[in-house]
Structure formats: structure tokens, C-alpha cells
Image 1 (cartoon, protein in one colour):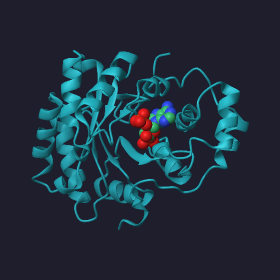
Image 2: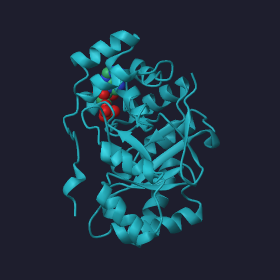
Image 3: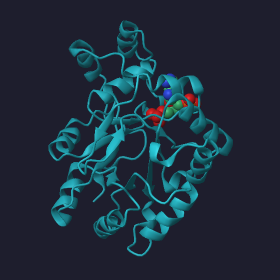
Length: 272
Ligand code: A2P
């Protein structure tokens, strides 16, 4: 089944499943995963300056002969590069590694207290230049988004956050929906934590799916874009097969009970 697109607030479309490249540090493993994903029909790849694998992604896409216009590539400006004069040169470096002259989506990686305001203004210049077809943020809470919109008047296209059945973030999801900000779920499998859970197993059995697919489908039914990371061909394949079944009200109720406010990586809640 083809992967549906979600439309961002600037009318650019984003495929609802992407391969997350976080923790793919090994060159051969990363390139193999990207090629497997391409073969299986993935077109959306999510990397970041700090992941250290933009060059692996760029090379793998080139070696595979993928057409740029068929791809959706995201990268993220790392915290140290938020300074006014550093953002664009750092993006140029990323573009060189990615072997392209634009990214489909460029994000500020984290709400860095001192620099996030001017950085967001600089991102708008980059958007105007065409080097990024859409711009957004990552790890922003409601408070950070409110501040950003109040001070700039520019609504980000995307907020990429940690989201899964163990960290459901309903207020943030509602806020983003209200303001037409697409939410992207990173670590949608909670880094592999909790896949062997009784409630998940029950729902998985009912739909003849894996518990991982149930976790991903829960994100899809929150209208988010999911970015599961895997280097295992069978799992890369599974993680795309999310559109031939639907979780019903009972399933969603069972999954709602899994909430643990579990941040497996950063918790930006207290970032001033
Ligand atoms: P691997 O990369 O070895 O295949 P997240 O995307 O939440 O960060 O989760 C990534 C972790 O989940 C990785 O350890 C990855 O393992 C594992 N994983 C990815 N897809 C699946 C799947 N379909 N079933 C089980 N584990 C998975």
C-alpha cells in the first residue's frame, strides 16, 4: 500500500512514514539500511547534523540512483550552529554531504534558550532562498511554540517530538493541530522499549500485526508523521506496512492506558 502524504501549512506534502537515521553511526550499516528502505518504497529520510550520517545518506541515495524529486529529505541545525552567522554555512555543509542543493524540511533541533529567537528569524531567510522547502522545529513544548509564534508571527510547518504510546503528549498534539503544525514522531517505538507488553500483544494479535506496528499505527492515528529507526531489513519493511488496518475505539482505549510520561532521550519540558 502506498504511504499517504500529509500536507504542511505551506502546502508542501510530506510522506507519513520516514526512515529515522538517529543512531545509525556505522557507515556500511547506515548505507545498507537506506538502500533497503529505497527498495521497499521509502522516499522520506530523516537525518540531522548531529547524527553524523548526512554524508552516508547522501552517498547511499546517489549510489542507488534515486531521483531527487522523488525524495523527501530532512535535516536539523545542531544547537552549536544556531548563531546568526553560522546557520547558513552549516546548512551549506549539510547540503554538500547530502549531495543536493536543497532539503525538503529543515528543523531547529532543540529550543536553545539564548539563540532560538534569532535562529528562527534566520530560518525564514533560508526558506526564502529555496534551500529549504519547509522549515520547522524539534523538541519544542507548547510554551516554546507560543513564544516563537508571538515573537515572529511565523508558524513552523513541523514540530518533531518524541512521541509513542508511553509518552502520548495530548496537550502538545492538540496545540499543534489547532495551529496547523504537523507533528512528527521521533522514537515512535520508544527506542524498542516496551515492545513486549501485554496490552500491545493483545491488540497486535487481534490485527495479525507486530507490537511495533501497533505502536506506529497509534502514531498514525494521531495524524502524525512517524520516523522509526531500523537497520534490519525485515523491520524496515514491517514499519511501512501500517495502512492496511485500523485501530478501533477499544484498541485506542487499551493503548491510552500505557501512558508513562516516558522520555527516552531529551525532556525539553524545563528548558527556559
Ligand atoms: P534495529 O535498528 O536493530 O532494527 P525508535 O525508532 O523508537 O528509536 O526505535 C528504534 C529501535 O527499535 C532500534 O533498536 C530498532 O532496532 C528497533 N526496531 C525498529 N523497528 C522494529 C520493529 N519493527 N520490531 C522490533 N524492533 C524494531
